[in-house]
Image 1 (cartoon, helix red, strand yellow):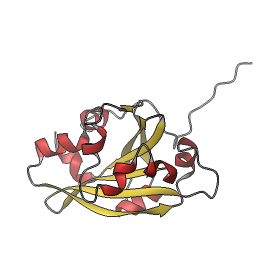
Image 2 (image 1 turned 180 degrees about the horizontal axis):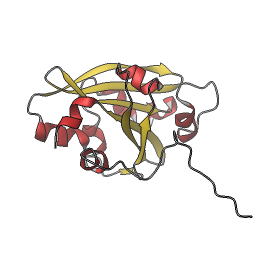
Image 3 (image 1 turned 180 degrees about the vertical axis):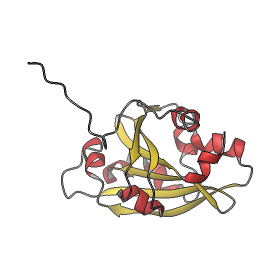
Image 4 (image 1 turned 90 degrees about the vertical axis):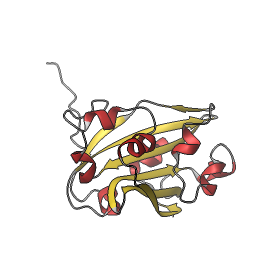
Length: 175
């Protein structure tokens, strides 16, 4: 008898959603640049940047041991006062003095300035997931409904930086 391994419904996957969100979520270029094209009143609010316990799947990607902290930066990309995307970045703290030292100097500037203008940075394949109600990233974003997210690992000198972008309801209204 042959067994089939089923994908867990909450696992990150290579298959993006269909529908209107597909063009936004599959674009490998800067999401910030795309938002600026559609929303001239773009602004970024930095929610915070601190040492924090990473999510279990983040810990594996960042090569952190159980209990080890990551540097987590969270921002909201907005149109006026309307939140469009919640972005969550995690990196191994040791890499702030190496490959990703520019992260601590970004302040309220978009991370895209650092990622898409540095020829030493490469992007791994994008993964997708529909986050269930109550997921830690949705709680951090302040929304109580399900939402699609994508994540990418960016590499610089073989050091990973993980960026997860949660697409909030207002972005769904844009075609």
